[in-house]
Image (cartoon, rainbow, N blue to C red; front, side):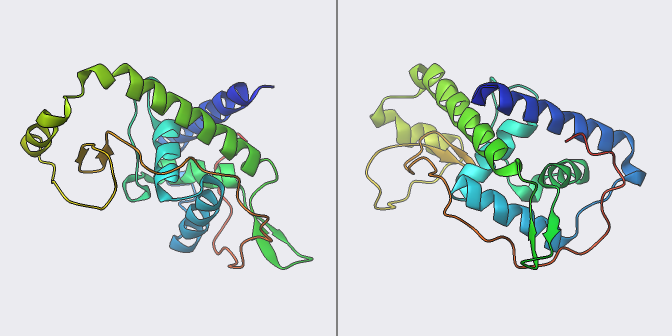
Length: 196
């Protein structure tokens, strides 16, 4: 199976898990704050940083792969959290006394991030012709509610709320070897049938 096929199969399963969770809202396990933090931590390790994680989440939960935006974990619904928890499927390694995501989570997450980045750059190139020339950037950005700040980063771009029209960060590199999460997860396992 290619990386693209793997990513698409994971995306389909995540979206199906969200639909199941929404249909059975009273029967799902909503992760605790500690479990949410563990999922954010492991995704950040795989993705490299918060921005790449937001890109991954935007791609996973978007109705269309052809147009999506970054998503913060603060805006995730209970059903989306339940789907992510099912995908991570943390298990305790009794020998090392650590909690780890399922074995296939890391390669699946990296495949999904790769596809999210490819899609993001296709979208960016597709709409590049609609970006204004540099002299108009300031007026367009301020008209749309953006702020002009000197960040010390060379280059021009538009940032409006959480939307970015230019990325200045490098692509994520594979995470270093990790021993696992050192925080035990509390709470019950999801009642929801795990499609993963």
